Length: 135
Ligand code: IDP
Ligand code: MG
Image (cartoon, rainbow, N blue to C red; front, top):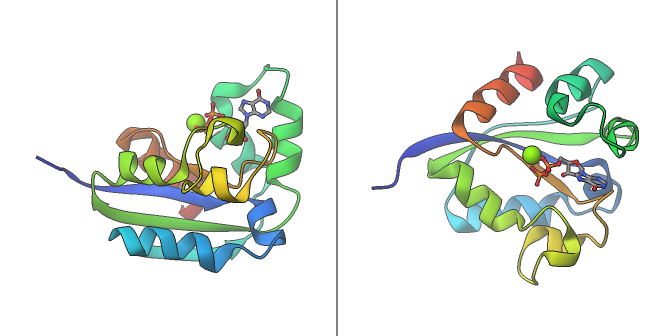
């Protein structure tokens, strides 16, 4: 049985800069997921650090924080059946090199450093991340 869930989705600065907001949002709606909240905003350094706490100390951490705070993002709460896993299915794997055509990262990205979109990896992460970005 599918479980009704909410997930936190964020169109990263490269997606906004490259003008892909509409196309990406359309893919979630086309699949049947519902947007409950949506807002264009800048990620603060505090939000970036909280969201990526698990990656602190890794070689790519400084670049990740600087990238995610480099320009406006689109913060979203998306809901529906198995929303967490369904959103990640639409996104594709973390590295666009492994993301097939038809996935958001495969179609709009080329490199892991700018991989277009964030999506929570579990319902617990979703609740935590919605708190970080929407208070
Ligand atoms: P996810 O976004 O698919 O959940 P995570 O492993 O949680 O992937 O990594 C969080 C984010 O950190 C990735 O989306 C990507 O932007 C960045 N990242 C992860 N690994 C690397 C790496 O090896 N090089 C550069 N950036 C990375
Ligand atoms: Mg993750």
